[in-house]
Length: 164
Image (cartoon, rainbow, N blue to C red; front, top):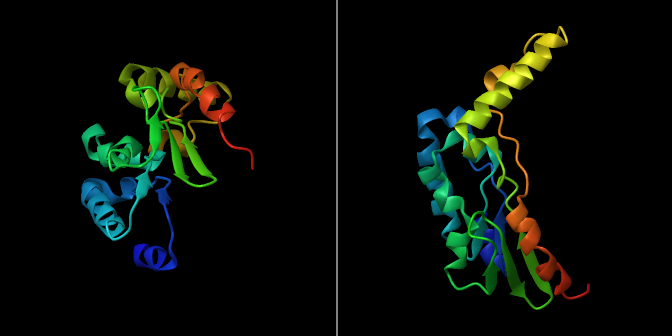
């Protein structure tokens, strides 16, 4: 695909995450490396981590999907708050991307909060007499939200965005 994008004159690709998932097991890091290698034929590419990446890879293994790494390659961009993966990117004339980190506030980053949430959700399911749903037994509850730091950062980029 990357070769086709390059041949068609594509200026930017954005990998929206879920590059790997838990079905890859211990091979998930190697699978991610293969995907990232394929993207090397094309540039620039912004990578974003998705919930499957977060549940399949360690923090160190998911680091290559942080879009701030890509910004170091010379894109015209302003980074958002240092606590998360958000940024304002001027792709070209009339094109701009504002990326927000929807996992800035997430139990994935707090093991105690993750356990408490799982206990609460399973307790609520049992209280309704339905038993514990399969997704709570089989998947990590990741949830996510845009945090206060991003919400404070966001208005100026939105206000200065050129009209369509």
